[in-house]
Image (cartoon, each protein chain N blue to C red):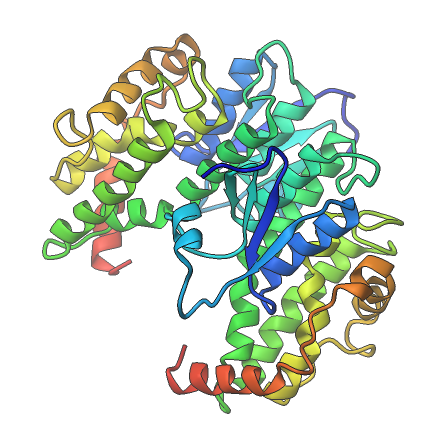
Length: 225
Length: 225
């Protein structure tokens, strides 16, 4: 496929937290791109062409060359457009810590999924498991900093940015986990994160998607998945 | 704990493929380190102190500061000692491809585990599943190159270096998967990889560990795990 040399295109869906982190990174870098909305129940030939192995979003196509897997895409964005808004620290040890916590969140994403999919009887345990993970993230990763990397946003913040949609999931499940009482610093982080201009301007409209989320939850519960 | 400023210590086990890739990286970089042998059935207080979250090997401790998760450790080694032996390409897109294939191997490691743990009836399917993954690795990642990154070793080669121990696993399972007939280019890569001086000098002695591997397999099969 012939492409303009610096043409940038992102294949994704509105609600995916893995797509959202890429959108935020591109917006923070001030890089122009086209967004191609995918329907995951009927994936486009382009998506299957560019990501034959995982067949998932997000896919970033830069000058005709595809990059897949959100954590890989984020590192690519950081390396292709390092300035003027670096999203990883310079120090190798601090970079390692950032990568560790990004990987940790992704490894534990199934706990969040289990929370969304929990049955009535499993609700208490699912909420407890999620709280345990978030406590580790708050105490060990965030610490006393404003953002995960210090005073300014980093890739780690973007990767935990899905926490801004947790309240919608909490509503359909009917249990609250991320509260000022239980997770004061992580809750405060979430408020600060949402107030950052680029984040605020690019939050998904999940209020409008609540009925869909409800349908998804009912489906997951009924298929025990 | 007080440490000499550049003291480097690696906590690991002889047989772990995740530890082995870190050993190879440090040897290729020509960096001196102390190796601390761990007994995973009786983990040392130091290991639990340095890796309280995952409690796993490898852990690299540099000047008293721990780095965990082998993929994160490898990137750290690359950034802390970039020259004279770079193990990632310079180009952001090629780096993204390297990271993609490292992640792919780790995501699919469970297929290798299932092969080691397969029952008599499950053997054929387990071998087929493993062959399918290795075919993708050969055709999509290795292509026609000598090594994954081209003519010289990269982190991707180190991460697929566990394939050099596959023949021992094949022996205890009783099925061969990685053969010149089925996977000619990947098999040729494995031969070339093992002939590289640093790799050759630092291959684990798995011949001596065959009885242990047999015991491990019997345990996994009997616990259906």
